[in-house]
Length: 321
Ligand SMILES: Nc1ncnc2c1ncn2[C@@H]1O[C@H](COP(=O)(O)OP(=O)(O)OP(=O)(O)O)[C@@H](O)[C@H]1O
Image (cartoon, rainbow, N blue to C red; front, side):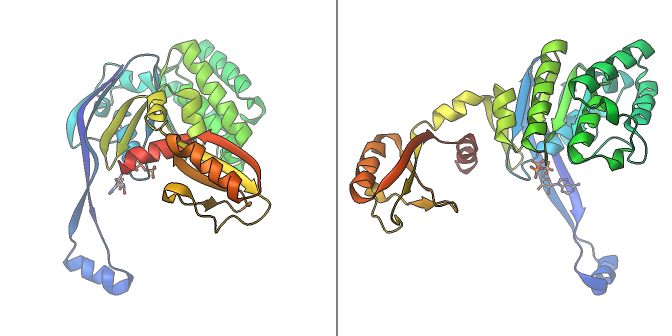
């Protein structure tokens, strides 16, 4: 459904020194700088998959999504999405994809969402019965029926994102790009959006590419992840295998009755303290027994737990190598 072959994007941009003098100076000399945002990335995504696109800030995720949804031209390389070259922006292509950018609404802020939907209905030529059915079903699923006729700018962030999702799915696209669809939402709203995405994918067999900085979104929805760093592909495979690669390490968490900061730990481990007074140590699995023995021996430990490395830490370890 999505085929990407050595796709690259380099941005050319200018800098400007501060102040008026800087502006005047720029009239005479404006050096052009280049930023390679995506570098020779290749992958394939089959129909019906939900794939997480991960990477630290500036890794090139949004640029990749913008190229695959036809918003940006690549510098080199090729891609096909639902059988089309995205940046040729054929109408049939635009009818095959939907895009939601959590940080930027696609709805007109001064109009109720319904007006934007009606406009999209014309653009994508969605037949009236199908249009009413999809809006009815999706607004019910997301519990936003009563918000369809309110000016978008009067809505909360979570409400607006839910309405954006409906707008992106009105024409029942086969491929959906979701760039931070739960950003800034409270836990309940994040959960309802995740449930909605999962249902939508199961019901319509849609292919979904999702970026999110919330690891719960990724853990809940994606079996496969593609990790980029500095624009390059760093990992493409099962999410569970990233966690497995780091199963050699564990986190030991505990609380104490007397201060623990000065305790000498075996194998030179460092003690970390959280603001709420809990302590934790990241240790290799084979050292955990000895670390616990020392802690129990030297401190008045109240509550001790051993945990797997959180997903964020495992993924972060990929970036740093
Ligand atoms: N129009 C542009 N001109 C110049 N540089 C750009 C432009 N757009 C993006 N970049 C740069 O390209 C790199 C990749 O940006 P991109 O937005 O794709 O990253 P990202 O992985 O989506 O990051 P984040 O997680 O912070 O959203 C960044 O270093 C960014 O500064």
